[in-house]
Length: 94
Image (cartoon, rainbow, N blue to C red; front, side, top):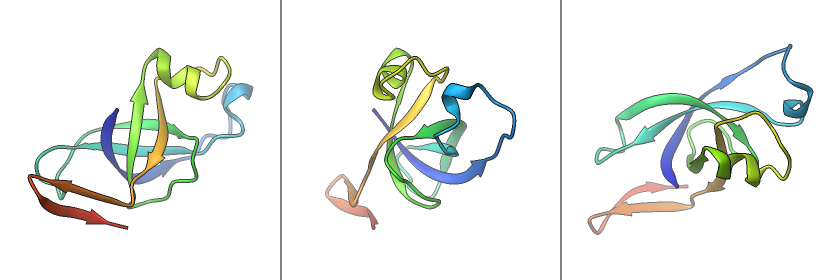
């Protein structure tokens, strides 16, 4: 699972019908500095996330399994974190 931050939303009026019920968010991987968002990509939301939240993202075949059906995606948001700490220091609080 990747630690990511939701940085935006992607809207598509034309998409595979299996994706219709999911919101597409732009997420960025978080490294050592929580204020720096690394590589960005689109992930389908399964848990009701929102912009600015720290989330857990899975990729590849596990992402498709998390959606419970064969949805054409490479990334899915599967957790919303209430708090995150690194090296004993809190870096995020919901």
